[in-house]
Length: 65
Image 1: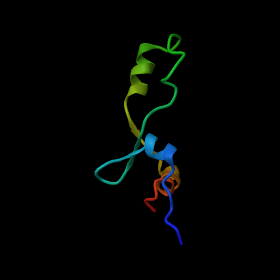
Image 2 (image 1 turned 135 degrees about the horizontal axis):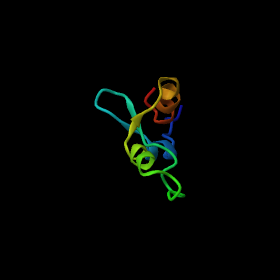
Image 3 (image 1 turned 90 degrees about the vertical axis):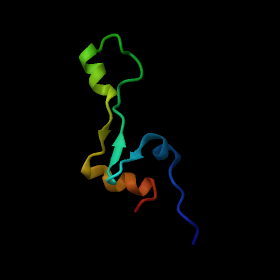
């Protein structure tokens, strides 16, 4: 049986924390920024964690599970 390949899109988008959680960036921060408030853009800058419901899918894409 061949090894499972990591999804290239996933390895570019997600990082693992030291405790094993998965970090992600916020969406809606790439273009059409003029109509968004400064407060909203600043909030989208910070990283966040992947939701628990999606964690298994992301781990499968990263071949961690």
